[in-house]
Image: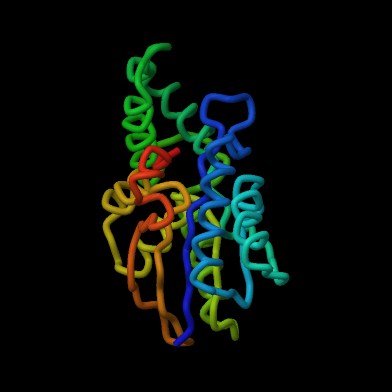
Length: 221
């Protein structure tokens, strides 16, 4: 069977004007991930990314270390527009907006509630419906199943990864949203696949960071 390494992007620039850029730590995370694969002589037939800067910048850590020449973009693996979803949600429930000095965990609670409302079609005028989001992720996964790749890396975002898992295991929406919020930056989830489907081997691993030297580099944003 073929191998799929499903990778969440490195830490993005939370709180900055442009979230869709890796932070300084994010660049370090992606470099360490590439070094990890290179040290183990992992090679990829192809690296697929969503069409977002944080995806492509993370993939560069892989391609620089492993000399992968075949890099493709598939916008099906783009993240949903969480800024828009949260904004619409807070217009409906302004009392839930965290204060200026609120911890990041308070914003995660808002995001979770907003995603649940979005999935129930309770948010007016979202930039993309929940059904459209889940459909495009499923279409992206079907293209992988029909490919001839044997060793494939896919760099995407936590939301798309959670929807992939939701389809694969027929998970309830709330459980899929819970998965989204626990996926680590540059984590690797490994699957085996053939034309018939995917089989999970491991989920949300960060072996390149799970050492005494790099534990402080584990992040979720």
